[in-house]
Amino acid sequence: MLLLAIVSINLALIFYTIGVFGEKRQQTLKKWHVSIFWIGLLFDTLGTTAMGKVAGQGFGLNFHAITGMLAILLMLGHAIWTTVVLLKNDDRMKASFHKFSIIVWAIWLVPFISGAIYGITS
Image 1 (cartoon, rainbow, N blue to C red):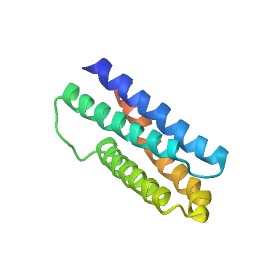
Image 2: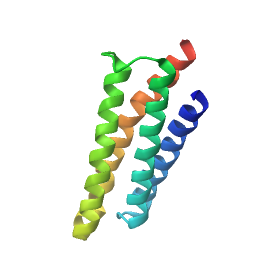
Image 3: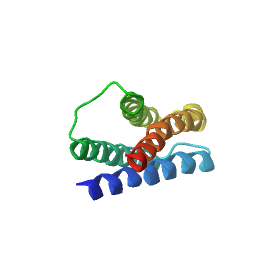
């Protein structure tokens, strides 16, 4: 279970990073970015669920748990919003969307890093 959690969380990082910086580099939101964001969310949710089972505890009120929940909610909102923007096909919104993506990605890194530090020190 621990291996599944580690691999899933790291795949989330890889997919989300590719999506965010691919979008920034291409300077517009494309269909493949949306797919990559949803895949990143899927792996993050899978990895977080597996880590919770490994830890054997429910949601706690600590820094990692709170930032992790915020990050998943932001990723979900981000994936939904990318889908809406793409469906509306508004070129102006697609061209400026990467600014929001980078903010969500940076916030997502907080629980990723705190989880790694917590895992190493435990």
